[in-house]
Image 1 (cartoon, rainbow, N blue to C red):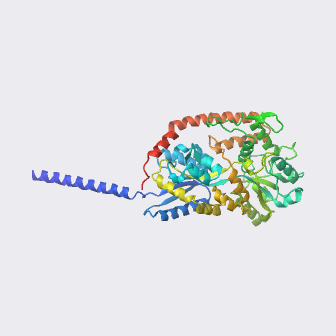
Image 2: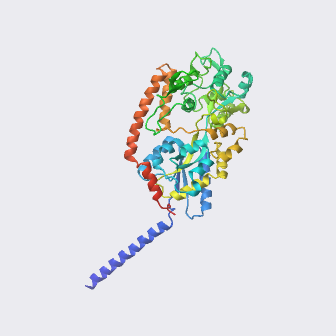
Image 3: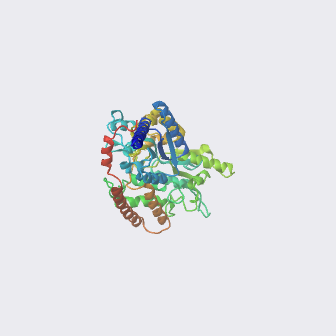
Length: 490
């Protein structure tokens, strides 16, 4: 009997002590919740990653929280980032903070933790701080879903050696499309070579050997008042939008935009200045190399492309290949429709890059403090200096206009607009690029091919909405939960 009592006592004490140890362990976890670093997932360049790393270190020091760590993970492309987000969030093992493009953010608000009921960070104060494209992208239904770090726009890079010599009435490419196509004609030099041009006035009209072909076409369609999608984002309408042209004629605006774009490769037009063999479409440099070699007078690019073009010039110099002088590199405004007067009347798309917080993050409130820290005027000035990307802060744009390299992009960022498409932009771009190549090769008419794309994208859109409805909670459910959630793990 004594042996039995001793065994029972031993078992009871053992169970009690083990229970105490378990409770003690759980208490330590609650007291120090930063055992795992706060993960920032991003797609971008090394300078952007270095900035986010530096901001994380400064923020940790400022917060003074022992054990607080960040980990910035850079993916090779936006597509790889978005695929990993979808996969890992389904497993509840995704990132805390995401740095990506505004198109993805606006289409994935059901995956995000918005900022609600913060008197110091209201939508009205937000709108007065940042440019229009950032506001249109990151504020939905008066709810803030993220913060902008940059708003980039397309502009015209040109070679001053060509414009000074061949444009008799001015030294800078024109501000309207009528002037631009006239300039393309004057700057082009034809010959009997396989390419047909010794110098192309403008690299435009194809999708296989020039950068940003869909983005250029998207801007042209915006200026033509093409309606890309219905207000509820339930249907694409770019192929059905009709309206009047400048001559008062009723036409399909999307078809007219596409026809104009490809006309720069059509020999029947005076402004024909580009072709299949003017650039190697299998290389990363594409038409930027043609420009750096002095064989194209004008190319379209973003602010982020300036360093890329300079590096290509340097590579050609190192390889003892013919190249333009770096001092001949200039940039001017993206062309507008005839009659556009003043910056405020201009139509241009802004490419927004921003930070958002996952709805599954353990550290949501702390992550929002990090986001608000990053977008201070001082920190966004550092971001601009290190990356060269145009700032989204209105109070920085005036300062950046003083720099000749930044002036055009800073001004354009202020009046740029957003164009949120209800499917991944990369998928839509592939369809349009394929259509442009078909037109270059004479495979179909613009209207027929545009209708084909519209039908295909609408079918894809309906399928994606069905899947999203089954897999993810509705955005209003996410918002309601976000409002009820306690303050992170602090």
